[in-house]
Length: 389
Image (spheres, rainbow, N blue to C red):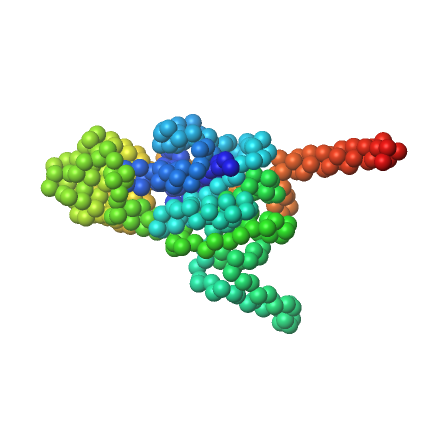
């Protein structure tokens, strides 16, 4: 069995300021990006090739940065016009590991349980999480508009129902042929579509709480937790700053001698921190970021090449673009994407309803033609062989 990793990248509203494209995958996680531990975990699960599908129109700078961050991983970035085609042209014998990085397991990625379940019968397996505890069975009473009981549903653990209040799916593994029934994001929509079409699926409950990285507060908390519980890989290429055991700094960073650090801080390549600035951890300063004189940054994430103006104060925030810079208007501080695509990236939306992608429709037409040819050939064969039999 071959395994391909499919990662859908997003640009939450909190990352849309600035002149360059920032995304969840490019969120600084220590000395690396969110993308790196994700690729490591997917590779440990058996992925040899990776495909990133952005929910926005990727520019050249985004493609170059993502490719460079992936290092020697075989990473492809699919443009919006290619989203339907790559699945149709894939290998039918492979399985696809889909990941929605907005839904981050706070204990880190571990794909071993889902792969073990998938290998039992090579079926579709979804890891699900919810904001509430789910008992082994859940009884639901559905009422009509008059308040009368219409039906009672009893949902047992590991059963697959199309509906699921509050359900989120951070990742799933699906055979290629099954994926052609209607891939889409969020992954809970894919699960619902499969269930409505009678596709056998299995659910595994997430063993970890799920953070929502489309929310700024969860983004800061997850990145800060990574700084506080840093591993050797998270500080690779950095060195401890003199007199501070919990501050790790890149060799190309420029830090004034009067800068004050408190707690765990990571300062990445080419970052600049001016005189009298105060950095309170857990905080991560991205590549090429600038912290102005007498500025204070506390428990925050400063994205690559962001600027914190002199004298400004940032607390528990994601800093993108130019924070506190006088005269930074809409055309300067806020990036307006040329196109932002819906989460249902594999589907065509007509009259408010999602329909199948062109590739999926073409695949079904091809299968129908093949079926007709098979039946015709079998019928002719029987006519020819009947006298002999």
